[in-house]
Amino acid sequence: PPWFYVYQFFIDFAPWSPIFYGSIVAVFCTNRFKLSSLHWFGLIWFLVMFLILSMVSYKRADYLLPAYPGAALFLALLLSDALKVAFSREFLTIKMFFTSVVMLLVASTIGWVWFVDFYLPKLEPMREMKSAAKIIRKSTGESLLFFNMEAHALAFHLGKPVETVVGWEKLGKAIDVRNESFVLTSPDNLEEMIGKFPRYKFDVLYLKNEAETKGLSRPFVFVKIVSMDRS
Image (cartoon, rainbow, N blue to C red):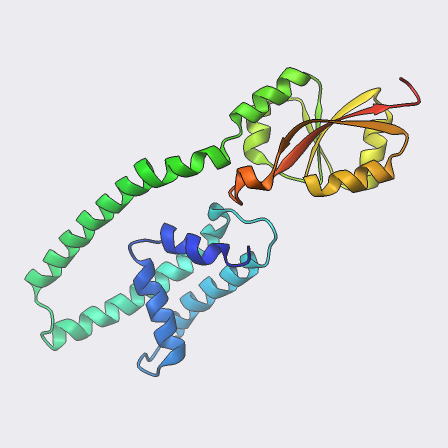
């Protein structure tokens, strides 16, 4: 969904994300912050990358990494300004500062342990591709065609040989030189594929649908395509 990075960045940028989001709201909704050109550079860097990547149809948490330096720069400058003000007005003492740092480190450690040992394992069944690859490779050891889709984790577990085909014309040429072809594609492409190639028989050998992936990986269908002219 378009808002995927909103909550994903909140999780991945923790424990700084609440402060970061709050700072952005404060910057645009109040006049309490006087930002330098360097502040704006970091903020615009983050926002441009964030908005562009949010408009891309396929999203992954690591795709947002180019936006992180901008976010880090913006937040570091704001926190530096806040600390200077706090120390100059004696709102914050050295002892209070180090106590806060220790508390933050403890909270971050607890949060990281929870994230790695409890949160991520719950998502693994929706992301796991090893079992699907094993089933697919039992069907054939021949070259597999990835048509109009990318699935890096699946391709890794499938191993070679795999090929990527983009466009209906190239798919037609690829399946025309084989008696039978094995194609992996999005379920959305299947109906159109059957309509475009009426001289071929299509057998669905495996389907991983949206209900199984829950948006954490791409659904796909594994199809055996046989030429009826040669069978």
